[in-house]
Amino acid sequence: MPAQTVHSMPSEVDRAWFGERVDTLLPELYGRALRLCRHRANAEDLVAEAVARAWESLPSLEDRDAFRAWVFRILNNAFVSSCRTARAKADHEPLDTTDRAFSLFERLHQPILLWWGSSPETDFLNRLLREDLERAIHGLPEPFREVVALVDVQGLPYQEVADLLDVPLGTVRSRLSRGRSLLQEALWEHGIEAGLVEGDRKADPNTSEKKAHDQE
Amino acid sequence: MTKNEIRSCEDALRLLAAYIDRELPGPTDAKVEHHLETCRSCYSRAEFEKRLKASLAELGSEPVRPALAERVNTLIRTFSVAGGD
Image (tube, rainbow over all chains, first blue to last red):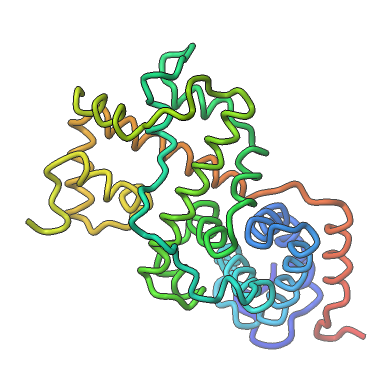
């Protein structure tokens, strides 16, 4: 078993250990890269770059039990320095922050919709396919997609995302809110097209939902 | 009234995303939790948002093409090691 910390050049044993760990984590490295980069070729390049960077930095890894979180951090840093476009780095905030956020839950609770099951939101989620979610997240504009990918897919805290992307915490919050709103709107539109929901999509949810909610 | 007081469903829903993300300070988190325990509508909304977030988390892993696995294996074989050639 290799030493817990390698302060000099890694050995052949270290390489075998490293290769085994990377191999185990490859689906997660690639999955996370794909949500960040969107395109398969870019995601594969990002994974390869992260693996190369991880090997170079291996001597600095104090605790090998922390390899998993460490290598994902390297992947995210490689994304920021290599894959991220100028457009995402720019200050790209919603033009109109007073827009009411789109809520899939509220849309699904429109009284006008017809449902077969007991709970419209459960039925909807049960009918959603993985590829529906993939399409929705991939369709998000880059500044919003990267924040949704980091918070919702990777589960990173807001502050870590702010530090990684070098933006204020408030920007992370606003991009996340806008990104989730766009994502839910895309899922709703897809749900209509795919026949996952039935009813009058033009119904105004603001009036009917408030009434329904007030009656609770 | 401070911005984190919860006197209505609107107050709770404003904090819901941060609550689900575990980003609220303890006392505010407890207030949202208490509201969810007593409001069926907001509880259902919270459960829906949690489930959707959990579905997105599942996208963090993706089947790897054999070509990528081979590329990474080849890359690792090229790395220099102590005592190597």
